[in-house]
Length: 542
Image 1 (cartoon, rainbow, N blue to C red):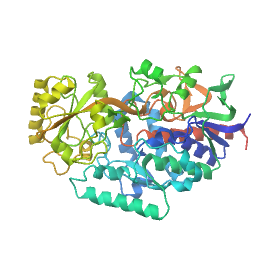
Image 2: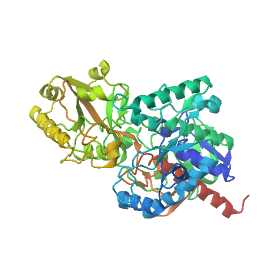
Image 3: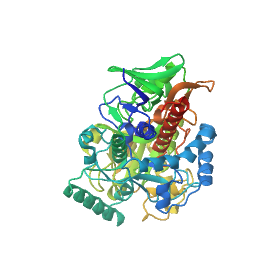
Image 4: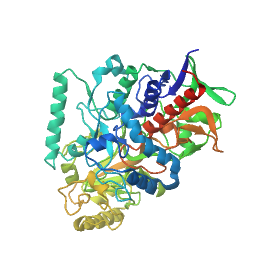
């Protein structure tokens, strides 16, 4: 039976950061991954990391402070997560990021101007705090490149988050074609150099994986956890189909959320598994294993939601599409129910709270002529298969469109008429769209007086089905500031730690900014590894 100081379950950002930390602290470590590829939902994501006041932001000229970060997080999270965990995340996050940069080939840069999601709150930053990976040559992974979890949206070009904003405006702003040319040149130069450039979550997962290799950590793919091994009231290992892996000082559950577990989603959220873009192996294994040992859970009704289009090949998670001027979201009554440019978690909360499932994204031809939509360039027809699948409808009049999607025609006409009046004045009196600096990030600077608002006037008109999709679930095992898994009475289960989406988020029911999933995942993975290192030191074993 193999024995290690630390056993990590899961190879996303939380698990790999923890394993890297443990190994560099002198702990023998192994990573067990259920899937036959590494990276989990991290590799499928945008790869942003939200850690206030870190060295990358300071290098790139972003001024931040601990006081502002604490005020901001407290103002949006409130009692959704303990003040102690919030402080631990903010106090130790910058330290974690510096450690990762010093012990892996990962390199990061500020995503210029990508606003915090609530920049007007105390301590918020309209220019943003998110950092993302620089393009990474996947060939450095060797054979492991073929074992990297594929991206949720494959692209033939190495596009970063910073690129995406301007590419959506390629027909509207000179920065769009300039940025497209830059992306193209980047790809050409990379190919000439024999590189396989990875960006976003692919680059993050690859950089961490290479860091693990350099630290001598093995990642065992196709090795699902069946149960936790205990002796008395202490966790001492992980049972898998191929054998048991003992852990002298702790097991870290970083196995992701339960977005792919039909029974758990039905129990906790009354929603299915078809609209998530989370990794297919995320079936709540770690959460269930912890519960079997008496662990407490929290936030199980919530997820990292985002309005999504249920396309025939899978859901498309909308970022810019609902924010760009010239569209609105309506419910089955043909009425608006939310600020369309709100943070995506809030937009879905509004969908669920008002029973607006499905909702409809209504736009006109001018919107289609101006902007990229779900990867389709401006002016290009939307794919016929989308219409056949019932995801998109088109009609020459709003009345005909309303009939096609079974909403009251008069209500839809009135809603569009009212919204058009708001667009002309630049003030959304119903939902305040465009009042926040965040609303403008994916807006159109050429649209005046409000870059988030434009009239819907040019036929044909379009209706796109919108459902509550997600990046993964948010609820999980309750943990303390060191990532130790807790029982309902607050006592810790000895030897058991959790981080990432296997644990209840420090963000509570909200979302601080781009990368506020991955930032805490990495931070609490790091803190858990340090805690296990401290256990070893206290044992007197060297």
